[in-house]
Length: 439
Image 1 (cartoon, rainbow, N blue to C red):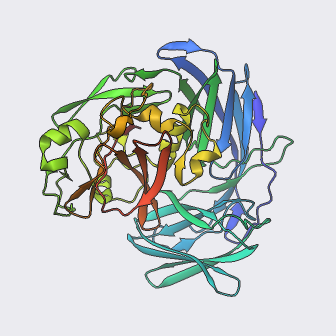
Image 2 (image 1 turned 90 degrees about the vertical axis):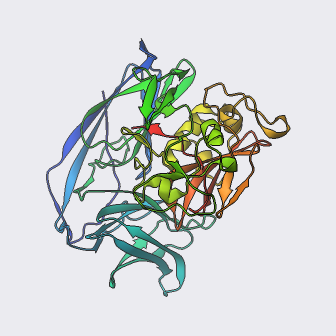
Image 3 (image 1 turned 135 degrees about the horizontal axis):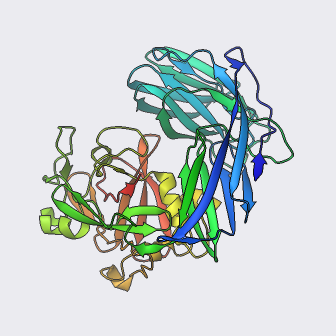
């Protein structure tokens, strides 16, 4: 058994006081469909705090010890900006903000002289919200948050300037307020706080499979190494008078078809929050929706919530995949860049052949068909554009993620003339397909 600890320094403010700690045991095993297979190794990466560690067979249990730092102020009616963790910053850090009611949040980053560096605004639901922050150039900056006229600021110090990297504020998600933690020190370095987002990559017989989770208790994880089969135990899903097939792609279970749910409205109308799911169809035809799936503006797809990974218009037990879900899929299907590779954090066309491996084998313009070894069978639906226009049919497939980026949202795009897959942020009024992922 392997025990991992952190040896980073964390500044303690009067906001925090030491509390009790604990330990988590994360246990791993693997299957190919329903048959047990032996893992060669497991890589564990902390996507929140950074850092990773590796377990080698027959060591399949990671024990992580931590010491709690209880936050004094956790009132639900209190607006609060928390100091970033880790602090100081070596590459990226996490900033948490608590808001008592739904309203607009304005976030601004300035240098020490008050000159603006970054600015973003978004509407947040009541609760605790987390953001990934990359400071960019400079060793010291100020992060300002403003909600309903109330303002709060923190100083952020980074130990090495990211001179060649632009600054970034990226929404991660929300959840109830919880204690912060730090780990104790040991020769083995692995930063962890309960609730951090961890990426587990299992390796067996030359293949890899990935799982994401935010563990706050001991847990068993089962890697799945089968692909291009119905999801074990759930071959189909009945939803809104339609039957969808399921598709296992290693440790992810997807709907095999694009979602086609809701009432058809004229493409010249904007989809609205009226209690009824609305969709666009190519050529304003239900037959096109039956073939390609419906086209949805981002707010409609999310059912008017900003929560990353929300169910949105997906069936119960499923959700609109977020940006990290898509990165995991891309790493699983690409022949050159694996799960967790920094390649997937890039913008624009990335990877080697992930796009070709997710495209259908027919129906693409200029014979730009895919190989489709995993059965994802992406179809070139194109997209709807600013009320009434359809573009790129036969040439592109586009899917929304549930992840916002400033006032836009991330999508995934596959083109007839590229084998790579595109990651870009679009205005939320575009109409894209939705492919649901099982919780």
